[in-house]
Each structure stands twice: as C-alpha cells, then as structure tokens.
View 1 (cartoon, rainbow, N blue to C red):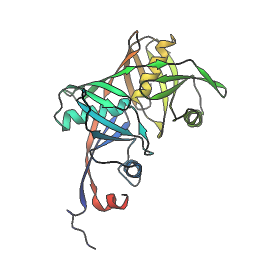
View 2: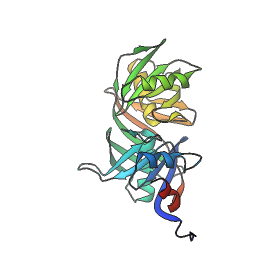
View 3: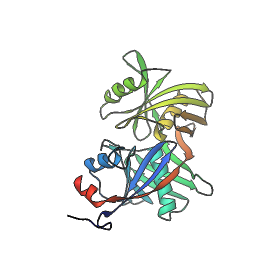
View 4: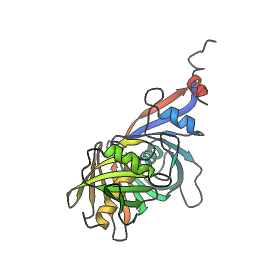
Length: 266
C-alpha cells in the first residue's frame, strides 16, 4: 500500500520543552502505558523523560494534568513537568500568566514570565513532609513527601546509580532518590535518580525534597539553590515547610506523529 505524505500524518501532536535538561512531551490525547513507552523511547520514538496529558480540570482549578513516567507508570507530581506544562498553557493555549493546575499530588499555583527567553516559571509546590532518617544498607535515607515520594541521601557516593536503583525499590510504590552534598548555607549539589526513569539531569520535585530536608535538618537556610547536572533550580522553604520553586523552561518545538508509527504501537 502506498501512502501519500498527508496520510502519514496523524492529528497526534506533541509539544516538547525541557527544564534544565529534564524534558517532557505534552500530548493532548488518550495515553496507554505502551504508547507512553513508545513515545519516550529515544531511539525509536520522539524521546522524553515523561508525558504530560492535559485533562478536564475539577472544580476549583483552572487546568489539570496527568503525568507519566517513561516506563508508562503515573507520577503524582513533577516540578519540571509542571513548569513545562505551565509554559505550554501560556504559549500555546493562551493561558494567563498566573493560574492553578490540578495534579494527582495536589493543586499547585504557577506563574509564567515569558517576557524574556527562556521563560521563567515559578510553581507553588505545596507542603513538604520530612520524615526521620532510616537506615538502608550502610547509609541513612531521609524520606520526604512533596506530593510524591522522595528519599534524600547526604554525602558523596560514587556508586549512586546502583544505590538509587535499590533504594527506589525499597519503598512500596517506589520512590525518587536524591544524592545531595551541601556546598554552602544556601547551596546544595545533587544527583538525581528518578522513579521510573533512572538517572536524570534535573528534577523539580527532587529539588524541593532536597531543599526541604536540608532546611528541616539545619544543613542549609532558605532560599536554596539546587545544582544538578542540567543546571540550577531555586527553592524557597517557608517556616511551615511550604515550597516555592523557580527556574527556566526552554521550548524546543512541536511534532506531528506519523499515523503508521502510531497505529503500529496502539
């Protein structure tokens, strides 16, 4: 069968952007685990650290999103994902500069400043709950919830990826893992092991978890700069552990998915 160029183009459109190296696709279409995995495949698909699917907003929220990890599982919340989704809403959907977004991890407020390039996005990430450190193998892990689960490990660990994989699976439902080192009273350097994705260049919710743990344990003071392989994010931690995260988002472009490729993976 011969295809015309038009017949190869489906209406499925993906918007790509990255937040200091952590990239997401916004796809306004029904998702399945198999389709998420195929789209996120960096060799056979578009490639991404996750999928953001706009959905109907519940009462009291302006917008809503479902967040998928590249393995097809769902995430409750993603800081970089939310900043990318906010940028998409502002640039592509005509959203105002400030609005609320529903996530499975709770409602957040977003502010997009697109007067310069790249846009700067601020997200009120909600309340952090920092637990007591627990032992795991020969290290201590601090559990933190910012609407999704995290495990903060302090210190330098050359085998951090192997440790991250084991720690991820040590918690029911799995957890994100951060390996953090204090640089000074307002700066932390970190490596990120993301649940369902593995090592990533940056993570917004991980940055919030690190900052919350650092402030709660007296290691640093707010505001906190989190330095990651992809760049820096900035987190403010209030006395009652409310979190505000900010940083750049760089839109890359929009992509149309070929119908034949899409049908072969449906």
